[in-house]
Structure formats: C-alpha cells, structure tokens
Length: 297
Image (cartoon, rainbow, N blue to C red; front, top):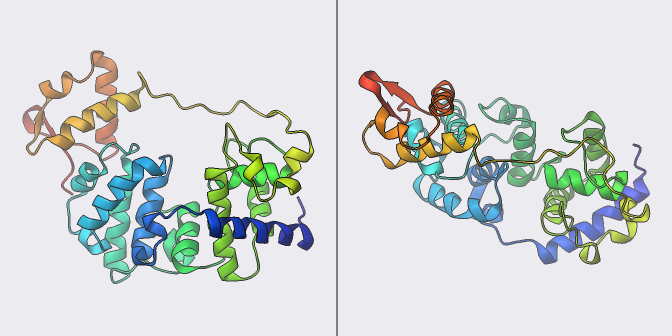
C-alpha cells in the first residue's frame, strides 16, 4: 500500500500528542532504565502482559543492574528468577545476550542495529525496539499492538495477518516520520495506542485520536475476513506440564530426583515428553542417578 505524505503526517501529530498525555509511567520508559533496562523489558514483554512483567522486571534489575552482573551467574539462575512469566527459553536467551554484550561490547548494550541483531536471542523486532526506545533511532517497531493499529487505521482490516508480512513491513516503513526522535516517539505511541485503546477485542474508538481517519471505521468496521485467528490454549498442554516441572526445579536448591518430578503430572507419556523437551531446550540439566537441576553452564 502506498502512503502519501499528507495522510502519513496527519496520523503522526494526533497519535504522538495523545501519547504525551496518556502514556503509562512504566519503569523501562524512565531515563534511569538505560538500554539494558529497555532490553530486559523487551524480552519479558514478549507474549506477556505488563501487569505480570512489572514485579519480575523490578526484581531482575535490582539483582542484575548490568549485563555483566547477569552474565556472571549460571544460566539456571536466570531461569529461576524468570519465575512464572512463561516461555522460559527467553530467560536463557537473555542470559546469552548479556554474556555476548559483556564479552564483545564491553558490557554496554550496542547502539548499532546490526550489532543488536547479531546478539543471541535478539530478532528483528527486539533489535528495532531497543534501537528505537533506548537510543532514539528511526526504525519500524512492529509488535502485535502496532500491527493492529496499522491494519485498522490504514488498511481497513479488523486484524492483521497471523504472521507479519512483507506488506506490513513496507507499510510500517512508509509511515515512519523522517526525524529520528519523532520516529522513536511514534513507535512508542502506536504501541501504546494499540495496548490501551485499539485493543483486540473491545477497541475504544471514542477515545482514539485518529478515529475520524480510521479506514476500518470508515468501511463500517467489517468483521475479520481472513484465516481464523490463532487462539492460545494452556490447560492440559505440554506447555503447562513444562511449567509445573520447572516450578519444582526453581524452588529446589539441590538437584531434584525423578520421583519428585513424576508427581507433578498424572500422564507419564506427556510428562516424559515435556521433560525431554526441557532438557533439549537447555532449560533442565540431567544428572546421574535420575537427578535433575537448572543449568549451570
């Protein structure tokens, strides 16, 4: 989709002005958070709501205020401190990123997008987010909230595709303000608009600063006409079993015998599959004599 200068500029000012008056006071947005605080928040916020991230984030930064502090600890300590945030492989990836930052970048989160992208566990989204939010650079930051805002306001669709497309990336780049500081503000503002107003289930169009320009509303707010949106299930899944196994290991100071892990789930085949998956992912370390622990290396 081609975006002319006039519509593009017409979106920037109202969204950024709205953000200035309605942005949440989140710790990773404060100057004292620094690039490391921004990076930690981006790892934690993937597929996890802010309310669950806040207490873990505060504890994490109090314990590991610099990448070198985390890198000096065993990877299993990162998994333990991750608690119940879910998707615990993110903890291992953040530990690996901290180690690379310490060894290759003098303990400072790099400000170069390519160097960020080269860090373990850092993909296109995280590299763009850290470069934008920590260093004020001009990058298209496409999370689920931003994609939904653009789908509705510009493309006229209720929801974006299930997976990010090349067309979405092209549109996001076309919508970027030319100025680096304004582009960084735009990235944060569109994300906040999607999180607070242009929500997935019940968008509050009456509060939206660009409702009058929204292509989806102009089209009559049509229902989603694409592939079914993926729903997330948890109860009874291998992910739930993995979480229960990790909970036992996080709470134990010593290696845990197999018998203690067997008690967390009634179905032996699924339990064994979940445990094997944790071992394969590097989240659990098997020891002789049927013992298990969080990884030390």
